Image (cartoon, rainbow, N blue to C red; front, side, top):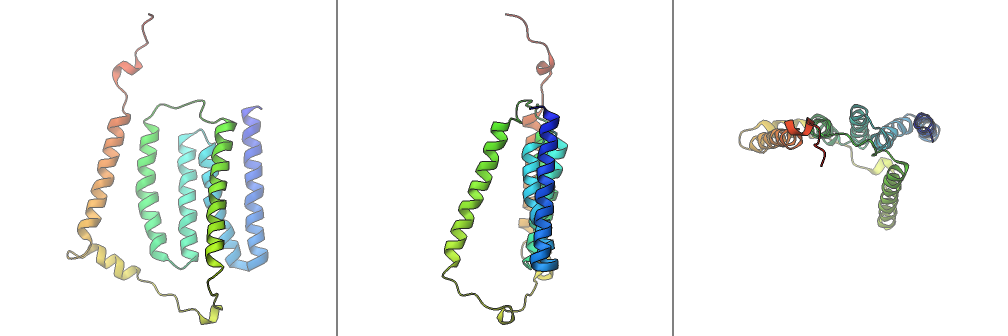
Length: 205
C-alpha cells in the first residue's frame, strides 16, 4: 500500500474514533463525559500517533498529547497534584530527554512497518484489556456509595509545594531529581553523539 494512502487511512480512522469518543461522552454524561472523551482521545490517540509517525518532532508532540491527556484524567479524578506533577515531570523533563536522545540517533527508515505497528497496537490494547479485566474482577466485591455519601474532595497542593521548598523537608530530594535529569540529558547526548569516522565512506574490501 502506498505510504501516503496509509497515512490518510490512519488519520481518517483516528479522527472518526476521536469524534465517536467525544460525542459518546457528551451524549451519555454531559460535560464530564465530553471532558473524559477529550482527554481519553488525547491519551490513546497520541500514543497511537507516536507509534505511527516517522518524524521525530511529530512523535514527540504526540507523546506530549498523551502526557497531557493523562494529566487531564487526573484533574477529572480530583488529583490536581498528580496532574501538575505529570505536566512538570513527564512533559517538562522526560519528554525533553527522549526528544534529545532520539534526535541524536540515526533514523531507521524501516521502523514504520505494518507488522511492527500492528504488533505494538495489539500489545497495547491486549495489555489494556488484561488490566481492565483485573480491575473489574477486583472491584466487584467493593461497595459502591452514592455520590451524596462520598467525602468532600480536598487538595493538598499548597502544602506539598511548600514542603518541596522547605529546607528541612524535600528540597534536597527535589534538587537531586533535577540534577539526575540533567546528568541523564548529558549522558544521552554523549552516548548518541556521532564520531567523525561515522561520516566517512567505508573503504571497499
